[in-house]
Image 1 (tube, rainbow, N blue to C red):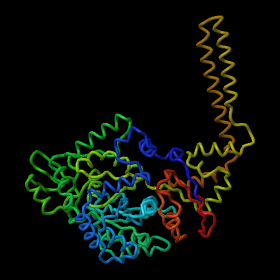
Image 2: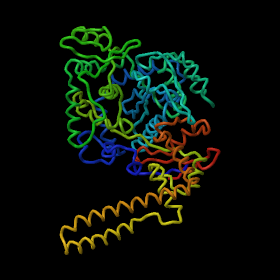
Image 3: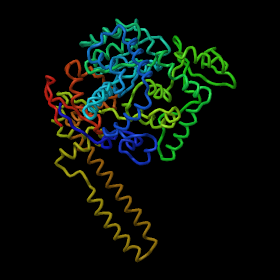
Image 4: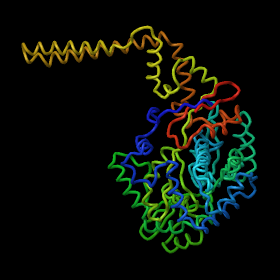
Length: 531
């Protein structure tokens, strides 16, 4: 693959908030501990070492061995599972929903980033061991966000009537969607047909795809692991401390002109049970589970926390705290929206005396297959130009290919200078003629812009065939008008190139904060990395 890197700002695809973070603007420095550079990990390792006990490691390893029971664990994963018991082993983690068939490409980009980051850190700090981790959002209950994926321009949907935490969904009604999908899908077919739950299926196919790279999958829906956050549950449910701290952080962000990604609730835990994940709310001295008849007094709920911590599920505010409590984690890899909401949470980490992880942006990419690459070549436009809007893109192409002078800017400037001189002369005779002359000058400028627009439209009609080719490339690279990585599935490339994941790992650089365009050069999938 040929690799071309584009500054994030030049893509017009990222929020100002995210850009402020990734460009290390001073105004955000109090919202995190360390900026994501390889050098910053020296102090991060030291801080995490002092806070993560041997007992924590023992509990984590015990839970993971149970979670992997029945999975064919390869050597790389087995080595990493064993190494987590050792004090010099740390993790780099990403999290994601249990989207069917991995969902959009950016899930794969997240996983590739943590794998590559661990490799880079191992070279920088050879005396330590770094384990890439995928945290399954198995307790999430937003089925609508995981039920579909897009392959080769067609949308496929898993239809089920199940409710509650999606990781607990059974996969018995998955057969129909499996039968629809073209190409080689054995990895997914085996996972969905041989696993009892969606979480089990995701663990299996992720292990099949990334196990050789040592990726460890963690399921937070584990009663034994949740015993470690019982104190967090009480602080949040009874005292609402996280709510107060995040609200203050959000207010500070707003004064900086930044919009917070998420807002806290007074209680940031759900009640979790079979077919149920509903918010807990406090009404006076009573705690209720929304849309259910469940009611608890404070003492009853406290007893429930003590005896059945698995019935409590953190929301987006406290899931990061849970993760960092049970993992020897150094960095969290996320997308723009994720990193922004993590920046709201530092005071909560300070409350629970937890090291705040380094926030590492995932790699961002646009994959250009060889047919599309040839089309781009025929347009004569550089790949980065396709990040522009269609209107600007068409103008660029027409200006590049037209034999006519389509810009009247110089004429408009000349006219403006002439009219300024006319206005000056008129005002010498009668000062009241000045506003009238200025108004006429403005009308002339509007007329010139109108003529220029009509010239461009006429030229576009004359080049309709060429513009259709440009539009075809734009639609291929930006399906539904969005970034490819947010819409298309990795099978678009993996089915024709089984080495696709390996090539991504080779090409991506987790500490190079630019958007990467990855281009195939021929039909066979053979590629060449260009640094």
